[in-house]
Amino acid sequence: MSYQFDFHAVLDYAEVLKQGLLMTIRLTFIGTVAGVALGICGAWARTQGPAWIKPIVSAYVELIRNTPFLVQLFFIFFGLPGAGVQITELQAAILAMVINLGAYSTEIIRAGVAAIARGQIEAALSLSMTRLQVFRYIILRPALQKIWPALSSQIVIVMLGSSVCSQIAVEDLSFAANFIQSRNFRAFEAYFVTTLIYLAMAILLRQLLRYIGKRFIVHRPTASAVKPIVILSKGQA
Amino acid sequence: MISFSLWDILRNLLLALRWTVALSLMSFVLGGTLGLILLFMRNSRHAILRHCIRLYIEVFQGTPLLMQLFLVFFGLALFGLEVPAWLAASLALTLWSASFLAEIWRGCVDAIPCGQWEASSCLAMNRFQQMRHIILPQALRIAIAPTVGFGVQIIKGTAVTSIIGFVELSKAGTIITNATFEPFTVFGLVALMYFVLCWPLSKYSQFLERKFNVAHRH
Image 1: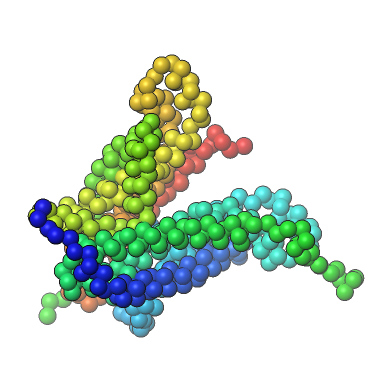
Image 2: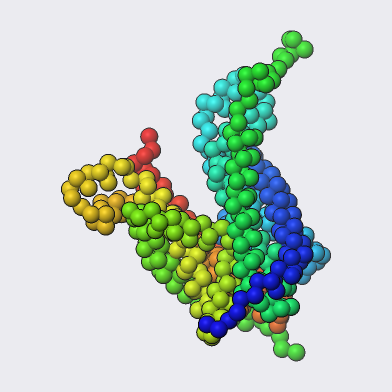
């Protein structure tokens, strides 16, 4: 092999890489927050919601989980304008990520909700908690504790999957790699450096999610910090 | 101007679907074989070997499949090899799926009670015999459902190979869109075809999971 590696040629474009990295982080952040929120709504609708909404949510989950992200992205970006909806590439990428993660997290959170013992819910209802309170304190929080590792891996998968968004010209990290290799023809080096950045991001994101899980999800408030839920009966009020 | 009927679109997509299926099967079989080898190495007595395999799995699970494809595609070219897209695609998918399957199966092997290892070593079996005759037959039962489930991931993974120019279902969709200017119909059909491939597999995986879990249910 007579090929001379030249990583300096790639590092000259550090600014491009930085911009791409920021875009990937932005995509991942918005996609994760909105996607998990959608997943919580989906899990609620599928377990507690009215009967007519359940088959709709199931169909959405099955449809998204059984088609590739790339095709969903192309359908949204190329297909929707054909149906009369104008959309920019960034909006399309974010929409596709939210819809994608929404379906996966619906399924993951639903599994956690299904694992909650019925007696817990009945006990809470007999304490005259409202349905919203029951869902928030008795169902959602313990469910999230149970499925947090699975949800974390899915978030990492979505972050890695966002590399595909470069195909509709969203200027993320893999777009930066394409751009650099089209300038200096150092394809292998450009993709190698980018891959390393993705790897570092995946490891950091996993650590970050583990920290968030420990600090905010699994963490049980100490006795002094517990705020009693005061429910006034009609007579007292 | 040539006009395209729905049948023209459908027929060309179905022709391309063959390549998606072929690539999926190939990656599944080769990835499974490599995954099994990795599984043996992952459970070996040599710490260095175990760590190498862990690193391999970490790298392939921690980087996008798209980047792996590009690296294989351009990396092999550095050695002066003329790499056709299908070869780069199947090589990258094989390496990628091996890392996931090895990790899935490791979980199944770990789920086998420790006493099974101890009992078989009391019978003077060596490491390979233990795996072959005692652990793997029991792990297989637990492994089937998630393995079938991962088959769906592989089929969906093949869509990414369209980016390096392998003409499978997604690439065919892009090409046909460029000719017909009907992206809504074409990508709708493409998504439907993936769904028809993946959905039965997903359902089958869920069915297997329920079937094998019956013993644990009270």
